[in-house]
Length: 394
Length: 202
Image (spheres, rainbow over the protein chains, first blue to last red):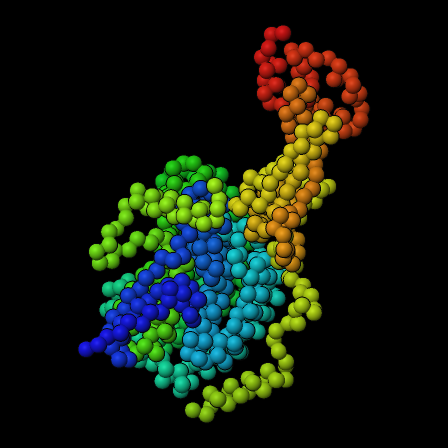
């Protein structure tokens, strides 16, 4: 039986991120898939070890443009876990508001892209228009549409001005009618049903085996959410529901995300209404030696940070585990057996984020040796030499 | 099958009536929300040149250049607009009531030549009278003396700088005696020479 290999990447034409999928197909059906990432490694963990605890938050924020709250949230929780301290209630609420705003715009972004992947550009344009309103809300609350720079170990950097809250709530409310119509348009649309129902099924067993996280696991019936399982921030003081679907196909992943947007709007509005008075910052002076962990339910799943301190004002070690690291391998169980035309949307259905995931890139392929630390240093020096020669720098 | 299409049609008609959502940006200027974090700008009247902003800046977008010219010593505070990430750490760390450097609403920062992407202000420096080393900005010493009140008069560098700025002492008088001994303690000195003149037996 003749099999052909179809490469997608190393620069994905639709997702516009550097990743490489090698699909082995038999006719129309995908029989094998190989994922290569590692084109986007920037050495952020090392960089954060060279900055102070306070300055590191800005590097961490730039791990990913969309998760610009999730990573600082997990990082600041890890640093606070070293001491350990509890942040003041007002800071907790502000953190929750910013985190949920990010979840709304991240889910809307993915929803638009999913429409774009399917050739349903009406949804793409509609949803991104809605997203603008949320980005404006974030500009009112934090001062920027993205990269909010609100988090710091021990609290938040800026307070939310009570005068800004009514205009922010009004803007959030303004998207609800359109979002409702959009929900109906997506849930009822017969074309989307045909295109998405029953494809790329991730069974509950597989979701548990692959340790899938976030909406990917919740669409498969695994009720897992850090905000519910180990509450932090203001999530235990607010009434909200975890959205869980049963089938695990792409359609359910869409539905879970759409419904989560409504939950996030609910959380955000409740927090803005019940914002407690008081301090926003603990003004932590120094961090004792020790290690701490922090987790946050990012839009894509649980983000996990580990920070070790040696008593100086810089982290001695910082480790980042992004949700896509766990979600990406599920394509082994979802893509194989489907047709190539469906592969693009199934691969996109986990809402992958490669710049979050790429912390180190050492691959073990057949016959190739794994590099040791010394080899990696040597390789990097050789590469620098080549670049220098090319650019004629002495 | 028909209902979703009718809904889409309704949205399309609505879009026809309301017009496009996009703004006419290059023709109509964009005004950001007042909370928007734009380019940080120095306030030459408030800034004391203490370099706190330079120390906290996570991307090293704030820098300074000292010109220790004995006639007219200057400190040039530089803000590089190309590397700035508008995080607001400088404003939060500013000792002059957070007004020495402030985030503005300025967002249009495109430029062709990267070397021009900087904003500078000048501050007057105070130099050590023995070695000519930089002590601090005049405004910084004034800020310290205002903070510590009467205790200023325990430190010649602080009170002389203050009196000089008020023009109540004759500068030629202080410069006259120079023996690098204990008598030099009542001069404006850098940390090293304050130590040396205190420990000397001359």
